[in-house]
Image 1 (tube, rainbow, N blue to C red):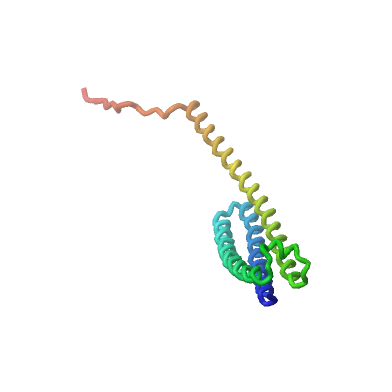
Image 2 (cartoon, one colour):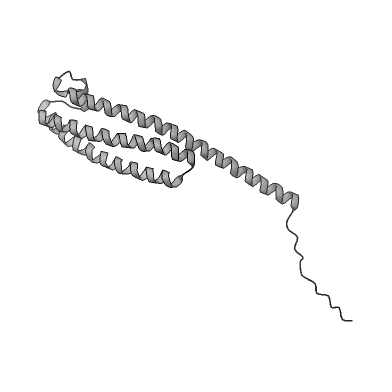
Length: 158
């Protein structure tokens, strides 16, 4: 059982590392949003997706090992481990708490980024509406450009 728990601690440590990389990329995303740097924003989204894919693999590994622990210990869910006072689970509980803190940090930064993107979207929409109004005003003030219907040729020989 100790071996399985140590494996879960190792997986959790690696997961936390990937989550910290996601948190950093999310902070950098804010700067890219501020600069309207869409190329950097796309690059960061791709980078974050790679980390998420790695985390998904780790989560699958974690689940497989946890199933073995459940069979041995009689625990039915991860919440039982978190509620347990058994010294055997202290390291795992600490890692899970650390992971939850990083996830909360990512969530907060993502909320800020989302608000900033929403503000920029609204600003772009406002500018587009103003541009449309300007074109309509120009059209009504200047009218349609005048083009003679058919050019007339005048013969000067008479």
